[in-house]
Length: 248
Ligand code: BJW
Ligand code: ZN
Image (cartoon, rainbow, N blue to C red; front, side):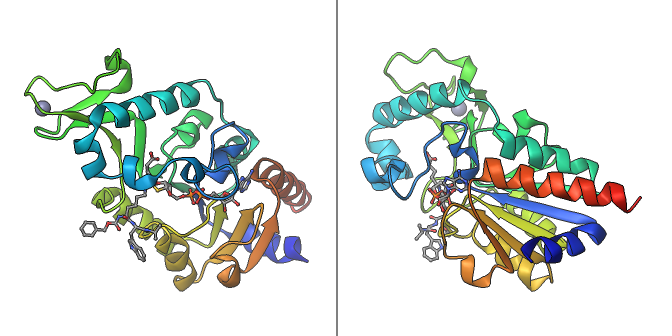
């Protein structure tokens, strides 16, 4: 039943958006934030993920990010990221709007990726805004400083900070104009990013949720698939491929 309604819409869809969160990278071995075993069950966001915490203890915050960078560097895109990238073969416009900072959608080959919460590979000086790649440093327990004397911070959106305005505006535009939005592996509790599926719904899109459990979004989703993203997405698009071939 779910599939029928979905394939019906997908067969005429031109613009498709994937709005993703930490759950899409869980099968690559990257921890999620909330829920059993999530990062925020062990560490306090207020001590690590806001600008005041960074100013208070930049070395600690840097140590935490270096630890996560190392984990992320060693991971690979999983079948969910790969399937999302491959959907560019079926639709005119595929846009990925991700809350993730792990760069895995780019590494999987997706062409348009709006990273609304930043990217762990980038850093910038808090004083002069010069950008630095993470590979530019050898971290030895101390937060790095820019040539201008300013502290360098990860290019990640912390709590209480504005999202990159141009990136978020483009993401909202893609959401308002899409025919189908897949909301994959996000608890959908962090705003303003969580407005993306709401914008899409208002614009008339079919909202399809993929998650291992119910979320804040489930009530408003048109279709929910409960399962792992790395299993559900390949299954959906393998079926879709077969149907497309039959209709040619
Ligand atoms: C699977 C799976 C598998 C598992 N397959 N699924 C309105 C109301 C209330 C509060 C606010 C509001 N508007 C703004 C706020 C404040 C705040 C906020 O939203 N707080 C809420 C938490 C209450 N927002 C902000 O502060 C934002 N900024 C802002 O609003 O600025 C306004 C401003 C105005 C004027 C002046 C200045 C500012 C910024 C938010 C930045 C969020 N940053 C973080 C952390 C970055 C640090 C880091 O990474 O080191 O980004 S928070 C964290 O949550 C991270 C994520 O991107 C984000 C979303 O989490 P996500 O991806 O959904 O992960 P989880 O763990 O929550 O969920 C994983 C899901 O996957 C689960 O559902 C699982 O079931 C599922 N899953 N395995 C499929 N295999
Ligand atoms: Zn500087």
